[in-house]
Length: 157
Image (cartoon, one colour):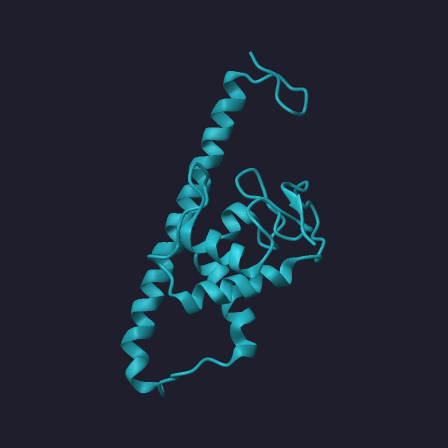
C-alpha cells in the first residue's frame, strides 16, 4: 500500500471510488456534449430566420469564451470558476504550468498537453473561438474562488 498526499493509505475501496468518480465525470461530459450537439442542430435549422453576423464585436469575446468554456466542458477539469480540481490546474492564481501569456494559453487550448487530461481543441474550435476562450480564461486570474486548488507551475509576471 502506498501513502497518499493526505496521509491516508491507498486501498482497494479508494481506488474503486476514484474509478467511479472518473466514470461519473466522463458520463456527464458525454451527456453534456450530446445535448449541446442536439441544440446546435436545432439552432442551425433555425438559422435561416436569423440575420447573418459576419463580424463579432470584440467586447463579446469574453462572454463568448465563457459560453465555450461551458459548452466544451472545460469545467469538468478546471471547475466552474476556474478553481481547478483533481484533473486540471487552477486557472485563477498567478501561476502557470505552460506559460502565462495569451499565446501560451491559446497554444494549450488548441494543441492540448500530451500525457495529461488536456485534449487539443484545434479540430473542434476555430482560431476565433480559441481566442475567445483564452480571453475568458485570462479574466479568471485573481478571482479567488472558494476551494481553489493549490498553485502549480511558475509565477507569472
